[in-house]
Length: 312
Image 1 (cartoon, rainbow, N blue to C red):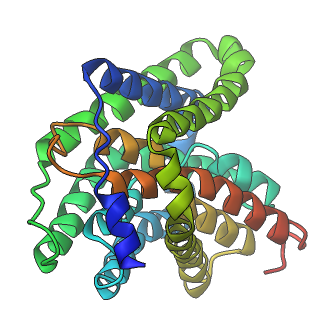
Image 2 (image 1 turned 60 degrees about the vertical axis):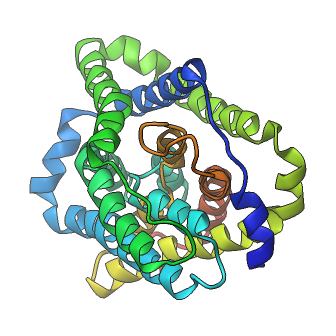
């Protein structure tokens, strides 16, 4: 499989300034849609039920990146460096924008899900760059497959602040000042954002569709394993720490649904990953993650949602 992945690695997906602006604007729009559903009361949950909040944040921002590093390090002779870096980057990202919906149909704790999305998104402005810098640099230095990759922390932070932080603040202000308007457009914008993300993925793959079809089976297996580990990490950690059954389901979903759109925007940013770096492996992983976690999240929700709320 390693030789096949090298062909994916060799792909260079770069955007001109206009293309980069479109990607950043699109992701900012997606985050704006997420922010419309975030209320100030969501942040009060850290005081009302701090244990559940901290368990979710630990699973997502500490355990998942750490376990991902261990996974790619152990498999470094079987996967390429850019595939590994793609997995590390996705693991460093905050939760995805459909986690609240999936939590609701899985009979999880929806209030906890919304609070974790809100708090996790704010924290990711700082934690995503730090996690990716730490684990990515550690892996890059431990791998002799390619040259060490310098991850510019200020550029990663600035990009995330622009496409995550500012839309988050704007969305929350609008939701606070114009609640009736927000209620009327919130679901429409969030649904539209999922469609827009899928279009971005399709555009990213369009020029390399033949290679995607040829090697999707390898990327599929890698993302399948990583996503399963993410869901299992959230569920097992919350089980060990004696969370309630609904909280376990929610923490599993929040850990297993990642904002891979943010990962794509970072990968295509020339200030973070220079034009001369082949980024095919990272793009393929992040893009397929964005598709697969919707499928796996719905499957998880449908299977576990058939159980009673107080069953495992």
